[in-house]
Length: 473
Ligand code: FAD
Image (tube, rainbow, N blue to C red; front, side):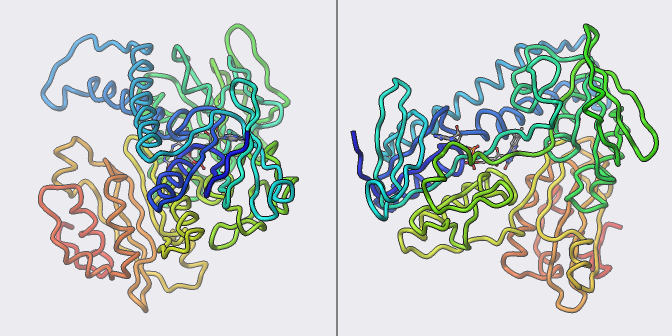
């Protein structure tokens, strides 16, 4: 059967389903093709399940530390299958929400694997898609516009391919039935440190091996240093500037062994399991790109500033085009693509103003340039920094760690970047993003009344600190 529509979307993850809803809101007839479950990585193997587990870990850690709040508890017991059950319930509730939104917006959902069969076969302009439905039948979609939103999967290290038992990617880790006694995490980026924080809170002995000379190496150096200090203080072993030697990998009934090299030194590590978190690879294979003129560069689909591929009627969004590989980036790109194809105005947020969040305990968040990036780009930099230990609400929450750092331009007074580590900072970063988007100066944000006592006071103070006018230190 052949379905003609205005917009077809290949992939029902965060990028795809948000694009589908907006296209329907703009009056388009929309078909979305999903081979697994609507919601994609974020809902089923990423943001939501990992944050649900992190929340359980935080509750467990807080109970263990409850004496500091004047509450004596005894015998807090971690029942990991129940933790997993709760995570599944959160995911399922949101999954039903996405399905409801598809129905509400009259979007046709096709459950099956899609493949672009090229503009030349059915229409010189359309980018038709062949869909192998779950029941084995074939369907052909002929849309006016196509959005490719096929997402990404865990990057694999040669020689350390996930086996589901001893070597895990984040996909397998999220569905563990029981916690390992110990774990080596290969890769100290965002996913690696989130798992380190979570498993440490659950009582697992954790070692993180990172090839760069610091954890979360794309973040501001001060935040990296503080993250490493706080994780180390909690008992996580952190090895930076270190490479795992895949060829030395071995396993027995005790667990895994592997050599880690740092400079001339080699250390043998043992643990119950290995978690590989070395980035994400775009899903660009077996989706029929060879039937099009679409270019793939360094593993990602190549697009212009409007998110159009080499075939102007075919757009690509989200993890499959690379960039930040974040859910809110994917959905923003989905909106941008849909508005562009509909000829509607859309103010897209520049990539560097997309907030980046890390849900460790405590959290980290940033937007804009790091101090190093700002200097490399020739800015004459001034910075303001304010510690959480001088913020009343942070002490009320029982946390003294972390800070907010503002990077500004000495000459123009522009805010170039804001970097945070501390309790609940992922809920504070949007104000910093808005300030940069609206071209506010540090002084202007510092004049805003931040209610007392709130954690948000720290942003005002850090902004004032840029010109030495913070009140609290
Ligand atoms: P995806 O969500 O990957 O969706 C792509 C969809 O396309 C999938 O459902 C797939 O089944 C489908 N598909 C692929 N090929 C085909 C085909 N041929 N036919 C039909 N369907 C197909 N981001 C954040 O912003 N915040 C976080 O806290 C966060 N935490 C994360 C934690 C982990 C452990 C991981 C792995 C990722 C996390 N991310 C987070 C990243 C986030 O999940 C991704 O950036 C986001 O899911 C990308 O959305 P997408 O729509 O581009 O792709």
